[in-house]
Image 1 (spheres, rainbow, N blue to C red):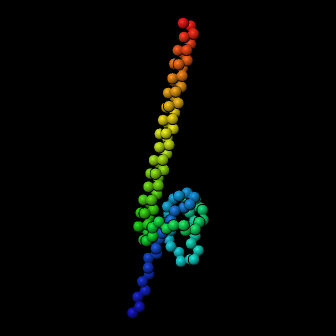
Image 2: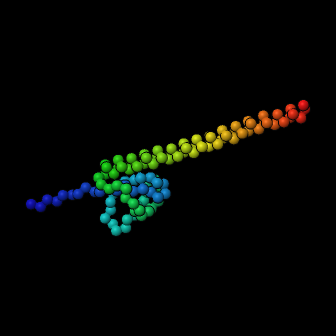
Image 3: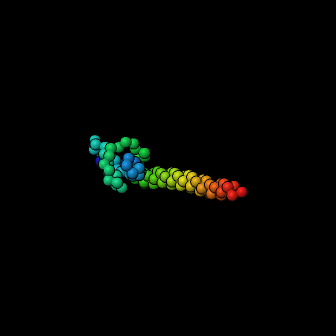
Length: 111
């Protein structure tokens, strides 16, 4: 008896160079290692494979990578907003100090 076992297709986690999203793609037998991003539509070559294996494991890995990327972007945006808020507060404080100094100078003229 001859048993023919069909192997499960293997999947890879790839990262788009334009939108930076991690995505799962099925491994292809073709010699040309190219893929198209499903979010931005950019056709590109395989630069790095971040994970490889069963579809479920690759989906979980891609989700985890995208989650971490989103958290990092959110933290960077919050840090930038905090810096802008601090800079704005300092400029307001400097503006509020200027009229007080000017008013003292005006009173000194009349005395």
